[in-house]
Image: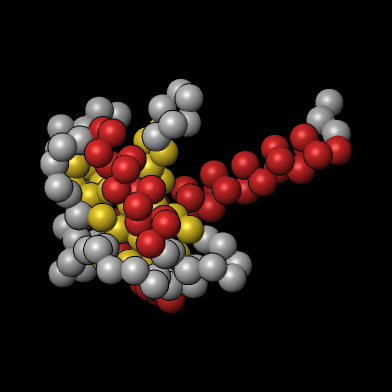
Length: 133
């Protein structure tokens, strides 16, 4: 049985995973959008040790991608935008899995404050995509 602090952490992980799944589904409905191509598969990637974690992996197929169409990060914090620190982490993680310079994407509850992203999406765009579907 989970109790105390451990239980709270466990619940946050489940919530975070569900949120990412819904955001990926919304992004799939939104694309193509003139910036990014449609992606037949949108998932995530992480190593077993969690040294590399990429929230959004747009690919031509799954479970093993032949071509990466874009990579991205989800930052759904209540008061913080996607910033240079988040972009640097995304670039570092991209370099760990590919040498290809594919598009970088941010999904953020509070916008972005950095340059270097090919696309950024917020609640309005993602909710709009769900409503149209």
